[in-house]
Amino acid sequence: MQHPAEHSPLGKSSEYVSQYAPELLFPIPRATKWAELGLEAGKLPYRGVDYWNCYELSWLTPSGKPVVAIGEFAIPADSPNIIESKSFKLYLNSLNQSAYASQAEVEQVLARDLSACAGAPVAVRVRSLDTVAAEGVAALPGRCVDELEIAVSDYAHPRPELLRCAAGEIVEETLYSHLLKSNCPVTGQPDWGTLVVEYRGPRLDAASLLAYVVSFRQHQDFHEQCVERVFLDLQRLLQPQSLTVYARYVRRGGLDINPYRSTAPINPDNRRLVRQ
Image (cartoon, rainbow, N blue to C red; front, side, top):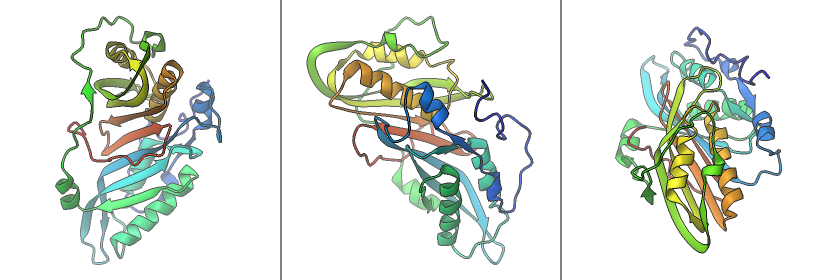
């Protein structure tokens, strides 16, 4: 079956357009991947958001002077479409030689175009380098599982059967791993990330979580679907009272993608990690 992104600019040679061109944005329906996971619109078992951060945002003032800034884009997890990442980058680059009267105008343009592509309201924040630098680098809560000893031999696809939990004992904890890696389903390029699991429910065996995370190493899928798969696998195993799963992916092409999925409303800390 042809992947929904096959008609996008992903993996193809592209001319970089430096004048405003919203038509460059390429939507990919979420419904195809939702169906693979047994999900459907309007009945999703989670709430969430996809945070995109752009470190290569620039435009011109009316006098022709360049401005650089960092953009934050919050796309609802239940939006009909994700925005294909290369088309996103090409679109943002089309602002480079375009003049705007103010930062507020830039935010309005971005929110309008991205919302139209996603099919749902996209929240936009454009911030100065000094503002973001003052926030610093975030430290993750909870316990890192990466030093645990595991034996791994299969990296071809996610293996939820590796996950284990202790029945009866209810805990509330946060576990994370920096060893998440998957591959783009179109180009095959690696996507590196940190996975975080926050839950209240039967105790999850930390070593089994690490082995499961590593089993994604050659899996081909987009960032959003990887996180949704983890969320669903843990939900089936733990049947938790609460569950939040998110991944902070390393930036590629000046963009990082950070999907959050949760059983409850959340207000994520979108500060970057050290690798981002």
